[in-house]
Length: 93
Image (cartoon, rainbow, N blue to C red):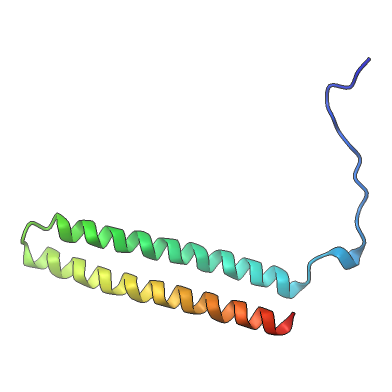
């Protein structure tokens, strides 16, 4: 009789193989900042679409310009924070 499920037993590793708290927190922060950056870029695209479809309405154009400005600020903040986190994690590792 053959085993149709290829289940292998895996031995647990040594506790020294586990990632450090600094590595885990750096990975989590990098992930969160990457998500923040993606959301800021999506917001920038939305601002461009709002500006494109405003059809000359000054209030909609003003909203789109504010949205684009704050999206650009968000992108700069996300990239700056990602840079700071990576530099700090490189300092401690």
